[in-house]
Length: 521
Image (cartoon, rainbow, N blue to C red; front, top):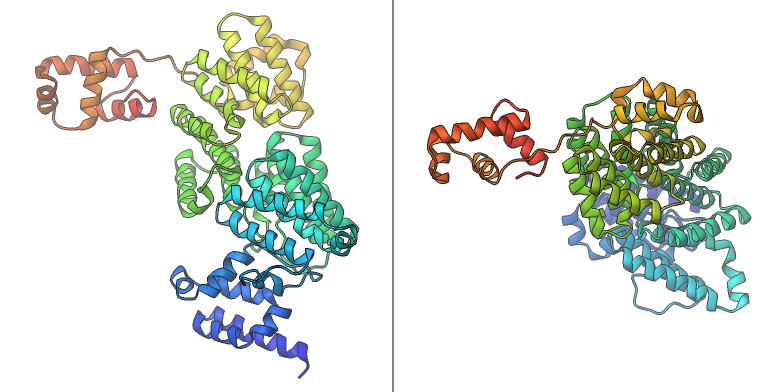
């Protein structure tokens, strides 16, 4: 039996044990062949570590360290795989390559555990060590650096540091191309496409999606790919009002993708299903909440996933005619770095509940702070137009609406135009006249169900009515509620009828539910 055949035999035995849930046997075989696996097949170690339950890992500290250190890493053949495991050992690195590998692996462990600040610091330290090294040392590791730059860029990306992320990921792409590390180049291109997609940079996003997909198609590698480019491509299809095609794109994304973006893919799938009319908002919101609960470790700190996931969930609430809940979610994001990123949607939600002044404030903030981010700027301009229209300021309204529509058309972001009520959109389009003669816009004007709900008339309840409503929500019979309020039952009934009339409901349960949705109680 050749050495390679022996390695394959060991790997086969381990995978068989894992497939039959014989975790102890898999661990025993791996530990008996530890030197062979570290030197030649660290992916098998990762497979074993990933299959162990939290209880099993707790009883095996070495395997817990392996699982954390390997994280999402898929190794290029030029890297020394044993170094990934050796970072758990307390000896100092012996070379620039080992120093960078140690810092990078620790950064992966920190990032995948939600410690994004630590991951960013480790990435910056690695870049500093590289810059400080002597030229011969740097030259000696150049062919290995595509994976390093990819991981450092990911740490910046998840910490919502777009500028550092883009420059670092672009360097990963360049090195991947130069040294034929196709996977690193494709993964970097996919992440760059996603960052541009989030900002609404349609042309840049499409270009990087094409690069990533061309690299994947040209490769025969069996290694796992991140395939973030497929999420970006799906969103771009939805931006062009093709939600069914977007769903199909995400469905084709391989299950084996190295997936730190899993939650975002799930959230995007939800919004595509809503746009395609394939699911109710109630079902989608329930699914999103379950997904968030099951992946709570990704919500340890304010980061890319928190902002993006919250933004999508808030959109679903808005289209479900729950703008108050949307406002609550987006207000919570103000404590997150780059929280203002979602203020355009909060402005739309404020508009929906009739808070024009607050809607205008949020819109103005986005217009001044995000002038180069079309996906955020378009909703803000639309809200500005709708508020001006309501105030009778037609010139301002048409100007802002025209800017929003042209920006959407130029960047293939037509789907972003649906955050204001259909009546406002149709009226503004008519006022704009020939300046906005476009088949896509004309088609949208004939599809009212795509848009955010009509704005509400502000409900004004008296202090006494609010206290009655709070007691109704607390529970109890009419006699019990009346007693707590020191009222007669007949007087309570009069207050109840006034509350129901103002809220436009038929009874107590509907009144309490609507009042909670609107933040009245």
